[in-house]
Length: 49
Image 1: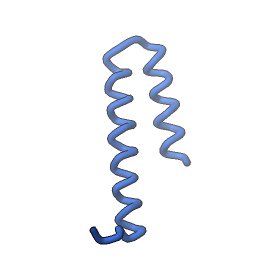
Image 2 (image 1 turned 90 degrees about the vertical axis):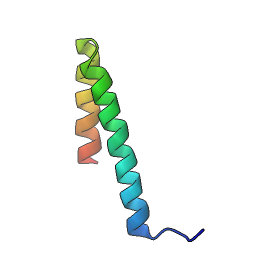
Image 3 (image 1 turned 30 degrees about the vertical axis):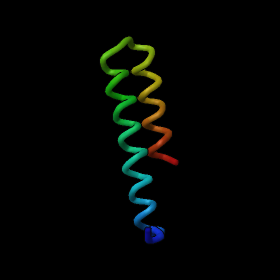
Image 4 (image 1 turned 90 degrees about the horizontal axis):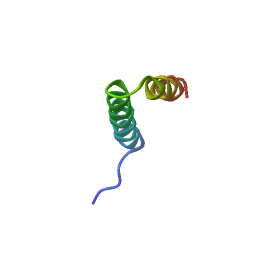
């Protein structure tokens, strides 16, 4: 297996992080308000860091 280049590895990591954030957000949207707030905080944190 070839070693992944830095940019490719970063792209894969970003895709995984995005998928995780979206699934967390999706779960929060379909449950109570407290979790929606939490998901919004996670999204803000993940997009700013």
